Image (tube, rainbow, N blue to C red; front, side):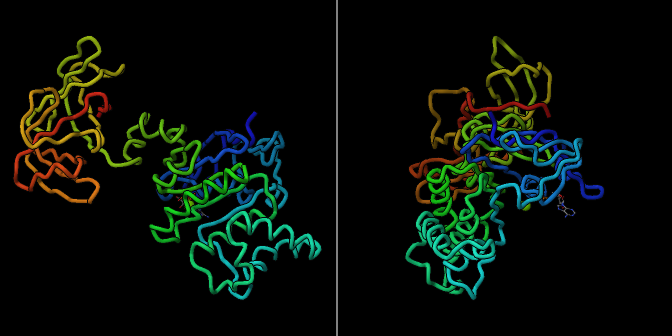
Length: 362
Ligand SMILES: Nc1ncnc2c1ncn2[C@@H]1O[C@H](COP(=O)(O)OP(=O)(O)O)[C@@H](O)[C@H]1O
Ligand SMILES: [Mg+2]
């Protein structure tokens, strides 16, 4: 049985439909991520779950308790939902120590000093701040402030943790480290978590499942590997990692194999797997990721999906190379091992892996 269930929920702001009839459910202990570009409705969805917004259609329930229902006119206020929330703009109170920051909410609830001490110590231990409890808020690094914000949410022992881009104020290196820490923490606590981010790498690393959102709707909901390896829409392909889109025309389809000519790439030939709704004569887009293209500096024996291109740019990243290659007016991005060292202006042969090509109607 799902732990949290969102059914047909909509929220508009004037003419803007921020969340458009979305449905999904989250399992107990799951790390579930809403991923999508700015403005796609991630925060609004989270705020609806938290009870900071009311749905105009549909229903939200947790463990069979209805939290909000537009039809039944039910609305449980945020403080009665058992949820902890951390926003992007978490504010650590500078005039308080780490201990006071985390214990303040418990004090307001009138808990005894002994109980507060026990709960706060336990949470600080959990988030790795146990030695810093007396440190003032002003003397904390970005990562430490982030942990304080998390500890403040966790100290109430919420049933569900809602995190809205909690790492986006941190610099790139710290963000990568905190991703891994956050994932480990979530697993240790075993708390059902809904995570919001526009950063696809973050979503991949952290999540059990990801809902990719676009224009207030969910485009695809699946595990990170399914989203990456088997994207169901062109939007998802585009949003998750780099991709080449090659306009093409279907020449023929023979026993499950599709032969295309690349319209912008001097009519170069592409062979790939056929898909159901694509027919001979259709205009299509063939999508392929840069890492699914290999580069050779000399012609090899194979001919299939091998194009002779000219190198436009070559960028050295130490562990790999990133190339831009041209054929006709088509630019192709390809990653290779650093052992391939073609220079701009030189000829190079790219080979498109047939099994990695996705076809879409254009
Ligand atoms: N309080 C608000 N008033 C008016 N429009 C809003 C409000 N909150 C969000 N929106 C609009 O709703 C859409 C979704 O916003 P949001 O959920 O914040 O997206 P995200 O978190 O994915 O960036 C956007 O077009 C945004 O401008
Ligand atoms: Mg947002």
